[in-house]
Length: 119
Image 1 (cartoon, helix red, strand yellow):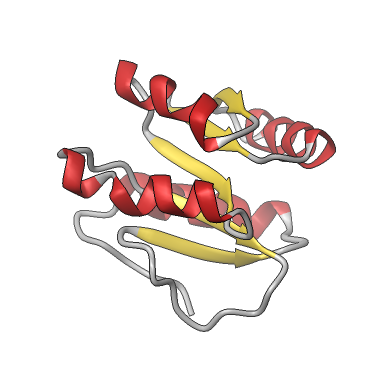
Image 2 (cartoon, helix red, strand yellow; image 1 turned 45 degrees about the vertical axis):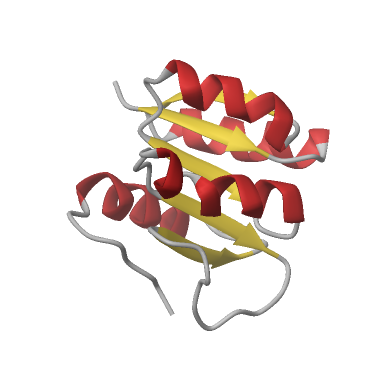
């Protein structure tokens, strides 16, 4: 079973997205902040990160992963309409997102052999 880490500073958002991801059949670990998520990532075993793109610290954490030799694809959720992601190896989804879009983004992230963006 693949493991998805959810990083969202809002408890309600974190709970909702975690429940949706679990419903899709993934194991979920959650963190409220980048500082809380960093040691989880460093322990390993995370296949995809789903995070709140509107939090600068979370965005910075994910942006810096490649420099640390860590290659984990991510799906960033944003309330702002973005055309492309400035974060490497990331799919951007606009909030609120449907279960189908989330399912597709996670499947694409798990099977990507290169960085990608969904516009």
